[in-house]
Length: 320
Image (cartoon, rainbow, N blue to C red):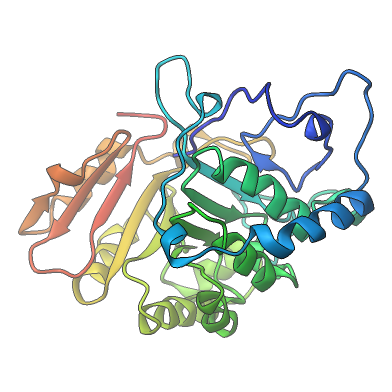
């Protein structure tokens, strides 16, 4: 699910010791330069703002141009990694039990986080080297006040085909019309339960109705499909699997069931795990399921209720 760019040793020498702390580019490793010097945020802002007065503009002919994939984005198995994830913030407006402790986490000082110009500059280096899809994540990316400007600049990069975002949906509904105008083309919304009381218990916050409104708003704005990520946990929401599947019948929603994965501090226990095989058994109890073999990708299985608008995706993360 998360392609890894393991080595970019030949990147621009002035970016080899760029410290981004916890507002990091997932899978991006910038090595120290030979003199060990750091690039300051203010210096990068000044130089990149000049550069992007022209480099972010693209003509209609450029809009569909594919950039050749650099050797730096190919691994030892010959696979080309053209999908980049950028974490915009470590802040989040929820405290989901499987993701974050109740008291939150220690936050990186703001001066050490990537500025919009730095984000766009780094993204452009990857896109010009063959990356065609960028996903914005967090934390929660929508809590950044400059999220619209970031989307606008990223979507203008020549050669970028898809600008996606993974969000908890809490503040999304009101921001989405503008984000769509700014080029946000694909949405993943996290939702682990259809029961408001369970939502509040798991996330330690209210907001279930706002997430549902965000899903409906995305559909109304023409996002098709709207992808909904659901982490399945025994004793919490494993009894809602079929209810989630039913959402795909009348709306262009792709439900994506994900195994509960261990992370530091999330009190992972194997007894909470509902393995892929068990989720599959529950899903196939529904009648008239179609196996979308043409869309099958490892490590996932895609199914559809005959005649439905959306599909069901089951991810294999720990068990087969």
